[in-house]
Image (cartoon, rainbow, N blue to C red):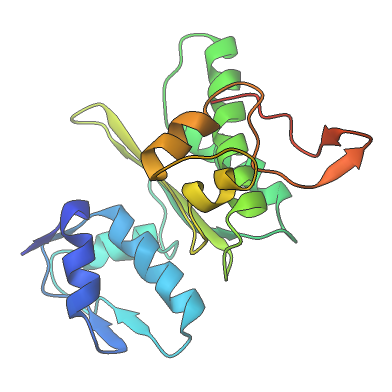
Length: 196
């Protein structure tokens, strides 16, 4: 059996036990591990295990028990350790091969900003979870920034009326738009809203 990200809502809704054994799956998408880790941060009684089986070695890599050249394991970032967000962004960007330093630096900035936005605006009940996984055979990377917060719509609606999550995401990408309500001085917001 395979757990892909598109089956995640059904899996979460059907999984009522606090003991989740993923050993029977041949492949588990990294997003599953990230979401399960977020669930565990909310409910400390949840036990997620991969005791054996085809996904056992990968589980050790994504959870940081072992290392891989293609994976930045699950990390938690909070307001208190927010500087580690830039470090994790750098580790994820290092998985990719950029031909020029400008593109690499820009991508690191964008990823750091996304991580910081999750910390600053999500009103998450717990730390956020971040990971990166390179799939070299298909030349793709999966990056997860997972929070248990209120969502884009509620955050952007603080300052700009939007009707749904997609419209809120599009609005958040416009230059000058910020969901921040914190002022540093005068009329200046804590975040510039550079648009991503």
